[in-house]
Image 1: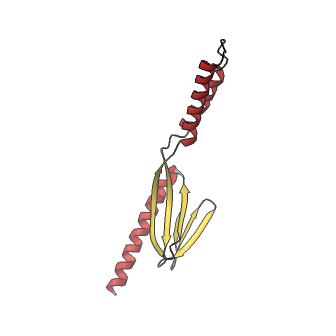
Image 2: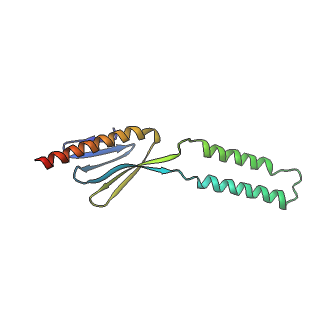
Length: 135
C-alpha cells in the first residue's frame, strides 16, 4: 500500500521512502506526468555522426576503419534509447501547509495502483470536509 490512513494521519510509503502528515497538513496531493528527456542519447548520436563524417572527409582512411566503431556506437545508442518503452516519468507530489513539497519518482507500472489510492484518499478527504461543514 502506498497510502495508509490512520485516525489522524496519512502515511506514505514507496520503496525505502516513508513519510507522514496529519490530515490538516496536506494542501495538494497528486500525480505528475513528465515526458522523458533523451538529451544524452541524442547528443551522443550527434557526436558519433560528427566524428564519422570527420573521419570520412578529413582523414585519409581509405579502408573505412571508422565505419565499424560508428556502427557499434549507433547500435549501443539505439539499445539505450529503446530499451525502456515507457515514454513518461511519473512522480507523486505532496504539498503541505508549510510550503514543503515532497516529490517521489514512481515506477510506471505502479502508477494505476497509486492513482487509485490517491483517488480514494481524495474521496475520503472530501467526505471528511463535508461532515465537518455539516456539523
